[in-house]
Amino acid sequence: MVQETFLLEVKPGTEQEFEQAFQKAAALVQSAKGCIGSELQRCLEQENKYLVAIEWETVEDHLVGFKNSPAFEEMKSLIGSYYLHLPQVEHYQKVKFQ
Image 1 (cartoon, one colour):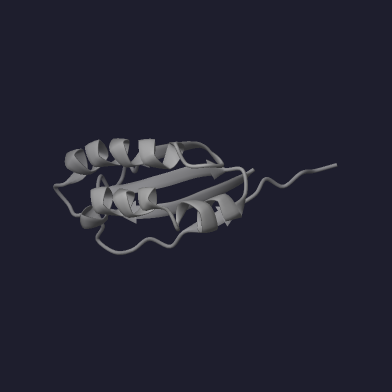
Image 2 (cartoon, rainbow, N blue to C red; image 1 turned 90 degrees about the horizontal axis):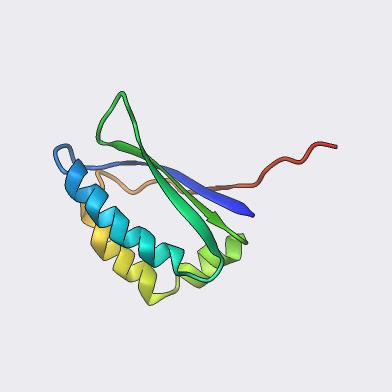
C-alpha cells in the first residue's frame, strides 16, 4: 500500500464550498482502480489549509491509471479553482520493522 499526501491551501473564504466540492471529487478518486480510501483534514491553526491523504494499492494506480483518466480531469475541474497554488504531492510507504 502507498499513501499519497499533500498539503493544500484554498482561497480564504471558500472553505465550505471547497469541502463540498472535495466530497464529490473524493467519490471519483475512490472509484478509481487501486484506490483504497481517502481522507481530508482541516488545519486548526489556518482554516484554509488542508491535509489530503489517499491510499493506493500501488504508485502506478495513482500516477498512471488515475492521472490519465477522465475522472482525474473531472476531479481537477471540481476542486482546482479553489487552490491558492498547486500542491506538491508525495508518496509514502510504511516502514516495516523486524
